[in-house]
Amino acid sequence: MAQIYCIANQKGGVGKTTTTVNLAAGLAKIGQRVLMVDLDPQGNATMGSGVDKRAMELSVYDVLLESASIAEAATVPDKLKEAGAPYAVLGANRDLAGAEVELVGEERRERRLKDALAPVQADYDFVLIDCPPSLSMLTLNGLCAAQGVIVPMQCEYFALEGLADLANTIKQVHAHLNRDLRLIGLLRVMFDPRITLQQQVSDQLKAHYGDKVFDTLIPRNVRLAEAPSYGLPGVVFDPSAKGSKAFLAFAEEMVARGLRD
Ligand code: ADP
Ligand code: MG
Image 1 (tube, helix red, strand yellow):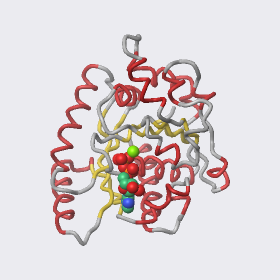
Image 2 (cartoon, helix red, strand yellow):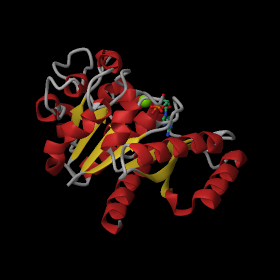
Image 3 (cartoon, protein in one colour):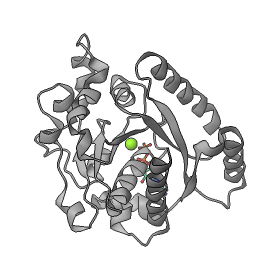
Image 4 (cartoon, helix red, strand yellow):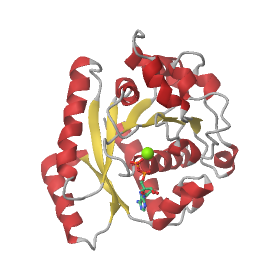
């Protein structure tokens, strides 16, 4: 059965999409069967995995509206196959923004993704869901479908405050919609050890959250930021870059954690 994780943080630009595509590629590289679900109408994770969001025939929109199955709508991009990091992509584009409105009044509207994943659970080891930066019906679909949330965060002054909001959201969803949901861990991203404040916030995080903080640290690394313009995760675009090596280490940490839990 697949381990299903949401990559979520209500803030934008914190590294959710970068984490999703690089973790997907890292896991694929070490032989895991991975499905990446893009739940953000911006479609950045889709483009960053080598799928043209404007040319897709079927997307996560069709899946949420029950006009296609995941087996029909997900594809493994050729570029990822050639690079030895083949993961399946259930893509998103601007159509998805309309789903929110179209689902109003529908039954089980926050459980559409969960229902759609049920028949493909055995086909994957990991399902990674890239969430939009808000608590929308789309994010709720992600949180209802997942057993855990991975939270990428920058070690900045307000980071801890934002985290309290997110922890509260997870608690609410756990209480009312999905008893399986829990916070898996906090991933420190775009980390620069030369900045004293980042080191301090990182220490505070460890003090408050203990082993909920992943061991792996993702450094700030320009190669990770360049990769999306080539339609590839950094792990594939430049495997030797510092940031790519860190994401590969994170993939290994996730596999080890799965065996432990
Ligand atoms: P989100 O999905 O949370 O909005 P993104 O993953 O799109 O965040 O990241 C925001 C920006 O930061 C992007 O331009 C991305 O390329 C860049 N970025 C993310 N992680 C790193 C990193 N470790 N080093 C350098 N740039 C990064
Ligand atoms: Mg994003």
